[in-house]
Image (cartoon, rainbow, N blue to C red):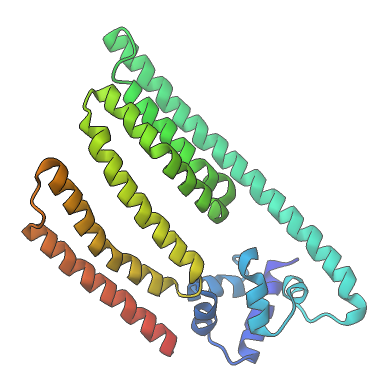
Length: 269
């Protein structure tokens, strides 16, 4: 399984189907830069889109991984070779991610040790160091799935964030001895998590319309702002709307319009 050969084969099949890199990228919900990287042999298509890519190009996944059209007499042999190569690549990626995770964990551990040592040296015990310690542990827990699994770990990280955010805020409020950190923070966290899961669901539902989903996500920030302002107004008597809120809405509308315009232009090309 040679990346250069696969890239040349993708380019040839794309041209055979009268597709530009931008048109192929749009159908797959990715950037044309990603397609360019495939065709120059600098990267491989993700396994999650290989089947769709093959269908668009009018080839089989086996031919895609072989980087050439396959005659029936060689089909099974090539399939076995490609399966072994994919298995080896997945193992290599997992090993690389494990090393990255180890370095990341070790770096965070060093940060924890430094904070604890400084705290003991200055205060004679564990006082303020518990705040960065709990924050570092929280960051490690929610980032671990993404570091190990890459894109496939996004859902796991979101689940970890959803599950641990409230306990973390409670612990933090006890450490700083400010009850509002939890009472207000918990409400804000729940609102934010609903928004994040909604956007994540949109990306899963419309994988081929990334720009449109981004535009929708920006637009959803406007009602999110009203919900947050309403909650803060109830809890701490903050004004429901200020001049900065109006300016923020105006900017969000401009950004969303720009993204939708780019999406429309890309689909028309």
